Length: 515
Ligand code: PHE
Image 1 (cartoon, rainbow, N blue to C red):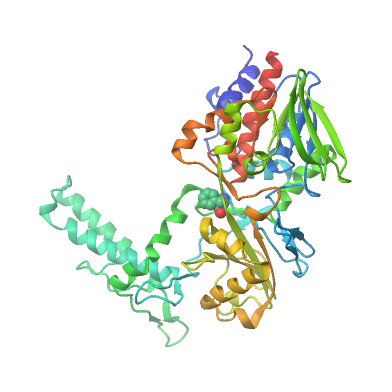
Image 2 (cartoon, rainbow, N blue to C red; image 1 turned 30 degrees about the vertical axis):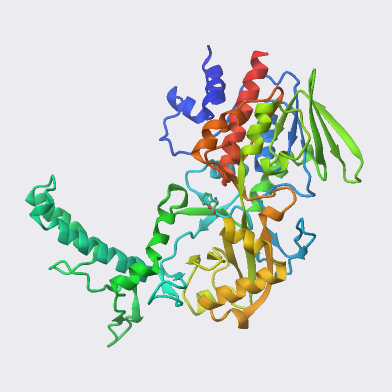
């Protein structure tokens, strides 16, 4: 076997050509280095019908096109990109309720209602590099942003700086731990010297006094900032331990610890849809827009897809293979020749509801008044969180994401009218930022479970579903392959769509080589 063959063969089974190349020592970089996907061989003139011009569908056409496959993409919408979408002046969307919104944002301002942040290790950035999409930092964590909870004891109903909650929580935790390990009774597998070193760490970690008490710290900020001349500053006093525990703020910390949410994170300059546009630049000529898939059929020679064109007329497209990237929430309602086990697997997958609202304000009060330059505030209200924009700092106006919620909160919010969602976002967010009513100008909301060609945010699997149904979804059903974020362990990420596409492309290509 030639080295090249091994590359796509391993790519087909493991989904990572990069891993294969690393295994073969063809690449010397560590596992986090940027990867480039390459298949070698001959397309044998095969025609591939790709359903959906989202990130997965366009990446499939892009990669298969590199070795000459004849790809064509059917896309239901007038635009490409799917959930990789940016709302800006003039964006129009009509939800399945019939409610139509037009974005009245100022030119140059935008928000990303779908994907908004990209971790450093995701292959999404590999494609940004390959396609020439400039990126900038997305601020996922800002110590200056707020926590605001209701009904949680003495710290209720007031915005608390994240740094205040974190410093105090860390202080009290390290104090408790320091006192505990200072006792012989614990029977720890540590020498006296180890314990001394551990105590030294805890003192620094929590900013404890020499006698191991947390008495507050300037790390949590100042009531009066230090300044010139005779102004040493005046630190805040710490919160009471019991009040802090009751507040539940500590339960927000873990989110940013997960590998996919750790700083630094990135976004394309100018809006997330720059990634979609970059793919569209490469494969846009292969896309038929406003082509709504009505039936997916197996034929003796491959597949036949029935769809309606932009005039509503029924059309059909045939091919040797089909790569279907339609979200399963939508696909399950499309008549298709899936085998019963595949059909059952498609039906089993649950999509998480999620929604966002973009709110444009006359001025960037969060920056000017609150000193919050990007990042996220969190609350136990329905709005769940507020994203401050990671672009356009200190300019005259801005759009922040007034809510980004999931599950029940998203269903409740999404089932309101657009005007009611906006009112609720202003009321709840206004408790954190009293400037809201004075400064608000215009908004635009998206409830993904009510967006026609999505009917949900992203696939969610329980461990049981992964075991019972997921493997089936990863196998082709005759000539039909599935691809998308739902076919990955990165559900809800563009990287999932892209990894899945590479896996599917490699598998399909291997079959063509063998066949
Ligand atoms: N990638 C999305 C986000 O970062 C959705 C997501 C959230 C996926 C949390 C997994 C975990 O908001």
